Length: 301
Image (tube, rainbow, N blue to C red; front, top):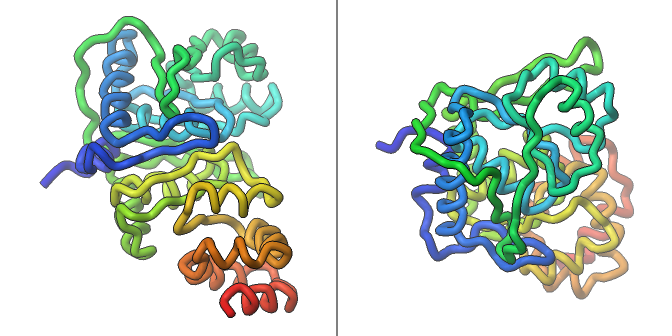
């Protein structure tokens, strides 16, 4: 039995199947994703970063955020942070996390760069070299052999919301992520034929595990969008020919309101599977108005 590490979520998948798509670049196949993970592991190791270190990731939603999480967590601990934090927030989180590096996009103007420099934490820009594959990148030129993480090694670290007290670190192991991805993919009956449009932030557990890791676990694909846009959702979903998406109740409400004005497109998308997955959660959360229920009825007639 393969060890329950993040890397093995991807390693067991068919090379020729698509893993990541995006709005502007060519699809990244699993063979490309495996190569990326191997390359980044060697680059991190070659620059004195080991599998017990942490790397803070501050990138906008999209293919690079998706692949950087998968690549980093396959070797060491990934610490994705909200790119919209203010300087004082970045300072708190970086001091708390003590990452070995901070990963940002090329020529980043994000305040995390200045904060990291102040705290003497190396900043590493992702290098895409004009590559047209969705989310393919490099970090360093130097590389070396590396040691795989174990099941109990930390692979992801997040913080509690801090609404009632000081935010606390929540570390997740390789085994935690592997098992969660396995359980979620089974509960949603996902297969390698599924294709998800991710609209959730990839610095939260929802987008990272319930969408991205769960999809990868069964060889399914994910369109790593730039974020949620209710006005573009139906067009993007139609272009990508998605079989499902996941979101929070306010997102479902906004999407359904748009669907009421674009019923033909909504019907063509075969959204029944999406409704079955999401509607129980949506109705249990904030009370959705009767008009939302009416739209659902029209969508399936």
